[in-house]
Length: 356
Image: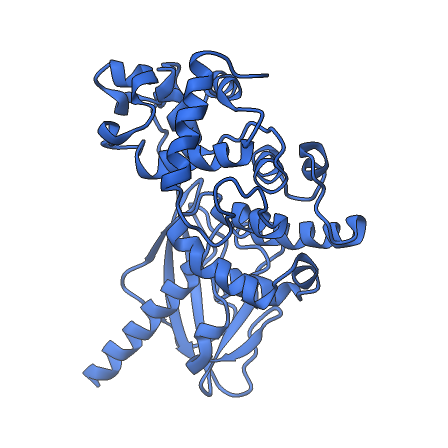
């Protein structure tokens, strides 16, 4: 759909602003260049899902140094990639990343498809990522709507239907203002506007290049958009975790491939429920850390009660696992929950040792 009238002005004003004020990010080509590397665009878009630019930057640099092309990533052992991803969260993305890279190499000769339809057919690539890569890497006209764009469009058109019901109207409005030319630059300009000016709270309307065409600005309360439905309280779950130490090593397991933190190294833990099984994986003289480790996942919060013990040289915990040197635990690639759990145990051990 071609933009007309007010919609044309929005696109042209925003692109003019972007040409001067575009954020310089390592996965981007300069404004107007239309020469972004599809691999770097795809990798950044996967990493940026529900994650800030500031958090992604060091990981993107680490990944592209270690795996500079999609073929390099496709050849990476699963364990190496999962360890490199540790701390970035939403670990299903890492598994999808590897599956997608391997499909690109296996089925497409190491070249990403250059259309939304072709990109959508890749493992783990949804509508948003396909549109973003098609527009930014290949210059295709695609309607790219992430959380920042959603907020900008809801304000531009003062869409007062609460989310998520408003999303079809927001996407239709985004379609109307997306130009045929420079669609990739336009998508990134909208993202930048939402990230730096049209922010969730206290938007900087005085310096916004679109304020004259913004319906929410005219209401004198632009921060009221998008309208959000009341959030339901997250369920709370409990769990037990075990630090099993032997001769300067701690017992680590690998979590099941499917499910939360799938495929990641971790400390052994119980099920996470309202009444978790407290049975430890090995008989020992257990000490419980007084304060549980709290963590918030997308759909629930967790309080993980940590227990620690030293075991004899012949003791072997139930199930598969590996003894990992305590002094190099930082190299194990533990997800954030278990990094914090390990820190809680070490702190408790130090406190008890200090008391003698």
